[in-house]
Amino acid sequence: MSMIDNQVVMQSVTVRIGQASGEPVVGVDATAHPGSLSISSLPPNCALLVHKVTAAGGRRGRGRFFIPWTTDKESVNEAGILETGSVDSRRNTLATWLTALSTNGVPMVLLHGEGKTALIPPTPVALLQPMTLLATQRRRLGR
Image 1 (tube, helix red, strand yellow):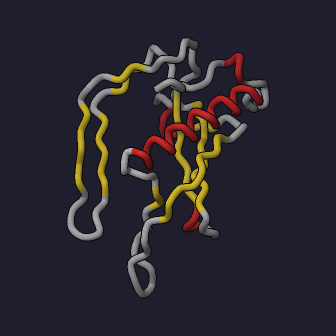
Image 2: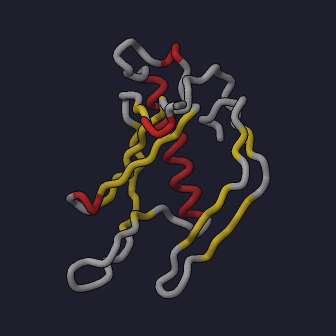
């Protein structure tokens, strides 16, 4: 939450942890979690794109996610490129978060469906890499 605008409050976070067999374990945190970054953020369709880097090659070894409310217009140029210092700060925060997940027994992994012959085991995420180009999410646009 240290990367998110302090005007944003996350409510009711749900986590599903897959098991080797059976249904996933579901945890719900109904506590309000406010952001702590003092900025006037861009709209939620303008988000930080984070690539999940793994040791596996190919399409199965890649993942990504978006984090909205992390950037103000002063941190982005006209081409949508984030300032170097802003990217470095986010990289450090994401590395700390990834380490904390592992330390607390819930390492980040990429999940896969069944392959042609067998179930493919999850691939551990080794690094979270913030992209320098601000991403947009069309589904977050108001209609």
